[in-house]
Image 1 (cartoon, rainbow, N blue to C red):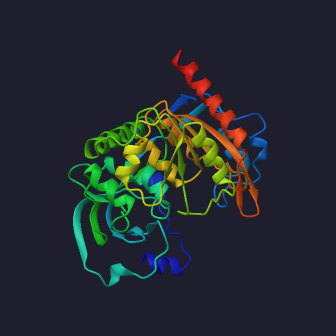
Image 2: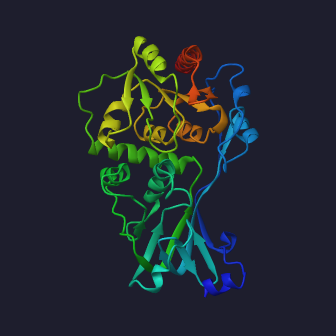
Image 3: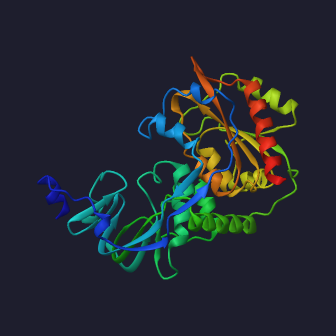
Length: 350
């Protein structure tokens, strides 16, 4: 029937204002701690990531003195068909992606009393959003509810994270949910921070520290060629300069979740280009550690700042310039920003 309504150009988007809702965690306002960036850095930003927020809004986030965390809300719907592209109720639909084929017309439908749908329109496309948002939302599911959570291919980081946290998502299929619960859960308020802490505890229990890495180390976290390319043309120069100052280089490519956890769990300082690889740090870096993000001038985004604040990192940034074959990092700016972050951290401890 929803397909028919759509063909007739009738609206089928769900109106969440009319759906039964429970506020799990109310809105919270939290003071912002100082950030580490040099004077004039923000003037170098030229454009945001296409399709995300405006450049003016991205820059404004760095200058606010307090942040408002949106409430966490649990919505409940009745008699939903849940499928690969989202879910439908009579007269309304929610899509995380377009429907390639109507699987629910040809596949068997499994009826379940209660399901928790812990995915968003971006978490199935971007690993960083999956890890920061869908993975943490999974802890909102009640023990008697089936868990719906995209996991990805066998052997992926997502599979390892799910296993380490003791989660048991249902297989991809078509379901008739007599009750379906979905969530507004993008804020970094008390509920999200508590669930991040719980997942960090579970990961620490599942993955021992090992003895490969010394506590208090400084690490350059290489993104490599994963995801959208962010190549640094003078990366060799940057790595030589950092290693001369005692940094170690850790490459994401080929690293398991265990490798990442053991490498960063006791690190003191990390430098890394902006990107989803930094999302691993939310579940590994200790509170109070410094994270200096190298942000491309033509795809300027501080979306990861909120997650850094959630675990109380000392966050800073260096804007890197677009050049013919990628980006160029001013190495001196990196070291001056590291010094600034260290001073801010020491001030916080006094």
